[in-house]
Length: 119
Image (cartoon, rainbow, N blue to C red):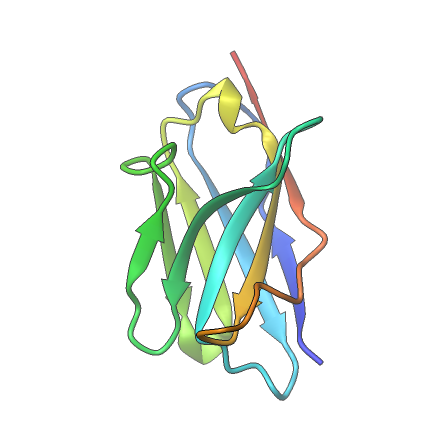
């Protein structure tokens, strides 16, 4: 069983930066990729970006491209989301999940960490 725990959220002002972490635990943790998602109040969950685990390649949603960067520390089972130039529309609950490869779905969602950006 894999558990994912997000941290690093908070209340910031527009233009500020923030770094989120996603810590994975569990003996079977060996993902194909790890992803970040967010959900604003009364909106559907939105894909933010992902990183492939073995050889780290990244992919981002257009809404965050150029402002958000995903990285990972494979030895520590940690994934990060560095966010710069935050905007009020980035306000959401940010969650991470793992993907086990082609034909699979995102799974083992964490509880999320709240990011609130004031204007």
